[in-house]
Image (tube, rainbow, N blue to C red):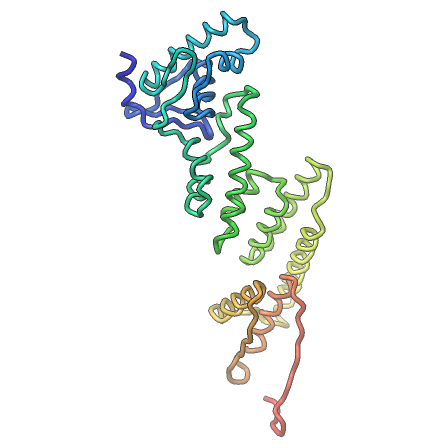
Length: 314
């Protein structure tokens, strides 16, 4: 009779919370011992676990007879929920069938693939730490390993895509003390024209490091924040003097092209840009905007001027 429930199971979820989902919805597993046994078997994957090992791991403070009774009861309730076909029970060993759909198994498989598509799939599967309801010490290494794999996957993906901002946000949310990732997030926000948000991220990092570790951010991060503050201060002065120096308007496409070439040069592929146009159309103003963008990115800007011989200046 127990085996008839096996076809109902669609998937078992352990990342974020423990859930068993069947065709008719969620399948309850109210026994704490059965939940602990299930997670223990999931961590072991399809490797058989000896009964004596399970008893020592799940009920280390019980006498042997009491431990065996607890294991029998947990196994009965687990087979009732999953179906007998989902669990292979031998004389002295127990294991889950390898064809079960379990998010933790899929996560481990995708992480092992290392291709970008596999890493993204693994990141999508990770909805929280492994079985947070289980507080036993035996799960801690597997839980920590899965989290470290997630962080590495997020770092690798952030290096491979043009807009890493969402990945960096998740990475810093998962690990607020990851200063290199926080610094990259600040840089991305600054390049996106959001210096206020970038400085807010720096202040959050500064407060977290002080509260958790009693330290200040690294010098490179502090220098970045100083450049952003200087840029904001220049922006405020510029706003105060708008009547003397009109705001930059228009030329959105041209400015975007120039900033894109600036980022290309920052990546090591330099070049030459020539601005052409009649006198008074705003070539110098556009160049000033490019220079301002370069300065807050840490560039040294130099200006030169030349005039044609025997021609009056415009």
